[in-house]
Amino acid sequence: MTFSGDVLRNEERAIYSLRELYRKYGYSQFKVSRFEEYDLYARNKSFLISENILTFTDTDGKLMALKPDVTLSIIKNINTNGKSTQKLYYNETVYRTSAVSHGFKEIMQTGLECVGYVDMLAESEVVMLAMRSLEQISSDHVLDVSHMGLIEGLLDSANIDSASRADILELVKSKNTTGIKRLCEALGVGSNIADKLCLLTDIYLPLSEALETIESCVVNEKMKLAYGELKNISEIMAMYGLGEKMKFDFSIVNDFNYYDGLIFKGFINSIPDSILSGGRYDKLLMKMGKRMGAIGFAVYLDRLERFGDYESEYDTDILLVYDEDADVKTVVETVRQFNANGKSVKVSAEDDKSVRYRRLVKVTAGGVEL
Image 1 (tube, rainbow, N blue to C red):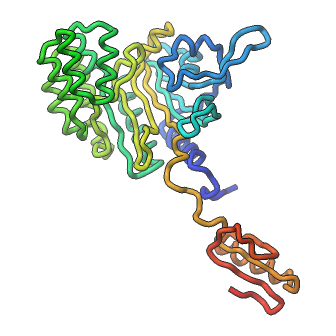
Image 2 (cartoon, one colour; image 1 turned 60 degrees about the vertical axis):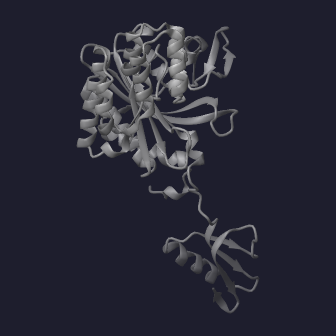
Image 3 (tube, one colour; image 1 turned 90 degrees about the vertical axis):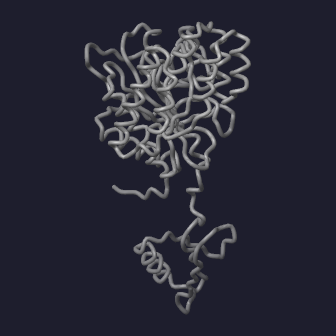
């Protein structure tokens, strides 16, 4: 059975194309329950996109939650040993506030997780698939990347406490270099570190061009490792022919409690928010008692509702109006011929003013009139 992609909504079209992409690279579909114990999300609220969670009390008295996230459920339910790696993708309904309506909504989410032994080869494959995912949705896209090791390394070198780190993180997110300088001065952080923070925050360049600046800011082993990882990713993406669509953006930062490596966000033209987000989150697994590596991303399909206007400008190609004296066989044959030529036809006994059509066709006792 075949069907036309024209009948699919933006998010439905994305699900089909992305599922085909992930299976092509050996990822298996993972199914999870619609709900989990609320405690799983309560312990990891800062990992979630939204802290708003729909809950209910189960028949045994347990507080349950309609699933607001898929990654936590996957991590909770899988185990792997040695150098084995589980490569999983999902198409699941999550329940959270929509970026469009701002009220609770059922949202289809797709994404993938690579869990277990995650080396540079596995990590670069996930980044490549993130870029290919954006490519499936729009040719006008970009993947912004950074590395938590860069900012952690700088803050470690200045012995900045956790509360102040959170403040600096917010200033970096908003690219507020004036605020960064003032806070560093108030904390007694040397101008060398403050200048490097501001320099990295200011640049927005293709990753291959940003590497020289990043290298000049390296002050310790943690930053050196982060730089090396970014350099390897840049070179591998160039091999895939994807280097031009990858930008370095230091302002992409995430919670220190969960993320500890490469992080990235994907954007397409005409949508102001990221439609894809992911990164390395080994710390989340450690927090859940699992000594494994993990990297993955999610595509926010609800945000595609605002992408372009995939709905046809017309309701139908042909509005076919027939009068009471028209020959029924002529009407049927006319519809059949238009359909055979790939045209959609709405048949009506009168000219329906509410219908948007490309062409009006009338069938009368005298025949067919265009």
